[in-house]
Image (cartoon, rainbow, N blue to C red):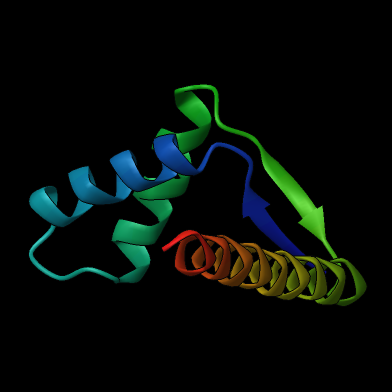
Length: 82
């Protein structure tokens, strides 16, 4: 199982600070600092299994296809009005 940050915006902010602070990123020291700072600022991690990841990818793929179909319908109705 893997852990992912629950607050992606905070995680990205801390990573940007680490890149400015450390000469080499990623490195073990920088990664430890990022984790510590993220937790210190109230960040939490969520356990994610392979099954959960696969479900998220399927859902994302389905939503993308749905958006494409909606866009095609809108495009078709605009052409029909002309």
